[in-house]
Structures are given as structure tokens and as C-alpha cells.
Length: 81
Image (cartoon, rainbow, N blue to C red; front, side, top):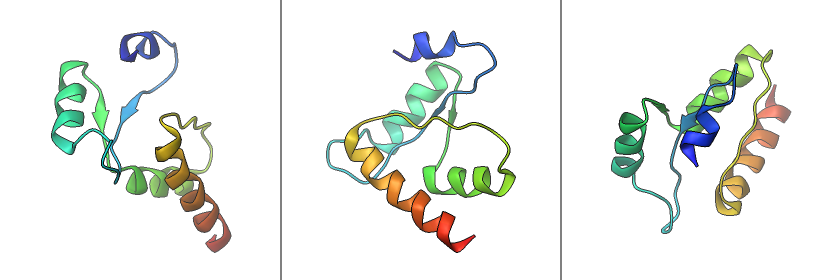
């Protein structure tokens, strides 16, 4: 699936992991990022920096478990800005 995402023009694909027993480990994500020449980041720090810029479209995708952590984070940080 990573290869298909990489084919999108004018896009940037970034890998991350999150706290969940079913999630890939940090080491697995790092290895996949290296193999596919992708960025690997801490998702909270990335979103914090993205919100500070505020001028780029962001599409967050992943498991429902991951999205259930991202959504409240975005809503919380949006309220504090």
C-alpha cells in the first residue's frame, strides 16, 4: 500500500506509530520508513508543527484505533489556539 501512496503527485507520505498493542513498533515503522525512503515522525509533534503552519492540507489515515487518538488531540489543540 505504501508504494501506491507514494505515486501521488505533490504529496508527502509520513509514517508513525501510536500507543496500542496492535500497532507496529517504533522499530518496525523505522525499518519501513528506511526501506521506502519515507519520513518517520512522532505524530503528536508532527501535528503540533503542522497546526503552527496552518496553510497545508493534511489527510490523516490509518486504523480506527489510530484515528480515535488523533481526532481528540486535534480537537483539543484547536480549542487551545
